[in-house]
Image (cartoon, rainbow, N blue to C red; front, side, top):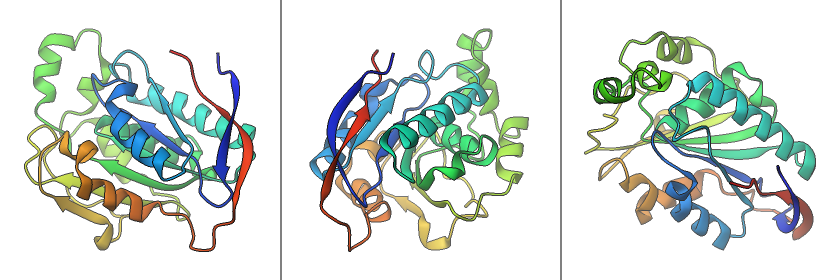
Length: 226
């Protein structure tokens, strides 16, 4: 169930939706949640299946529904999305294939394996029989080929952020739709991108509201129950 609650939403600062990665939970995104809330942003986190082991296409479909519902229930034109690791793949798939571009203003991906990761072999050995997602992030998978080849809607701006010591999701090639200035390789490993101050500043700058944002207005918001 998604109960209605009251919260303050800045008039020109879109709500932010956080998408966790493989074997992650909503708690994975807690450092970003707290920082964004301190900035006055309305933040929503969701659990996409059991530790993101389900098909990434299915997770993208669920995310697309939630993006649409937040936009409609809050009566906002756009939201911003931050996807960590597999979460970035899910969010990009929702934008390219599930019409979420109608509601998403900006997408930040953190350590997302757009070229795949051989770490997936370990996942296949342990969870391959029950987890479609570990097969989908193998280098050269059909899911990744289709995701990269499909055009990105021009109205959605994307920033890729990667860690130069990330052994889980090695730095991939820049996506065709991402401007060179928005493909950032920062110091640190995979989880660093969620907790480091300099990584947060790169996120914050990209999704900052317009300089002329109006005073905050009160609107109903959503918080999904566990």
